Length: 199
Image (cartoon, helix red, strand yellow):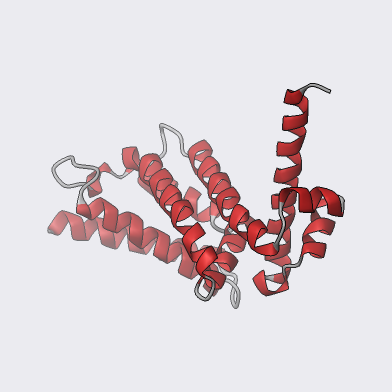
């Protein structure tokens, strides 16, 4: 067997394991994440699992990057050239209602007491922010100041959007109300926009 097919198979197996880890995070939470559960969800042998990851911490750290990459791809693929600001926010909201985002929240909560996770989260969080920045910039230029899309107002908009989406995702644990969430986001966007125009 040539080196390239072997490398491709290794990448597929690794992605399979990380997809399994996301499933486990969604179903059992970080506290219930075990090597056995990840192995079962991924459908791989114990040897394949331990070949790629020697511990649960290694899996969790790799899952952070895996989740960030998937979310970024989803955002970039879903927001098109004819998307309005309102539609773009709605698209991002739908993405944050998916299991991948829920799994990411589990890791965020665990990072509060685990320095290794906290450190690993930083690049993924920056990447998600950058993907949001680049994807939404063409549609929310009215939030910029003097055409400067990197202006402070736009960065506040992005920070606010991410904070609001995380809060809504946590609130959905008790009451899953997607229509109300859309109303909250639409009201926030309108209030933010009118505040910018009056400032």
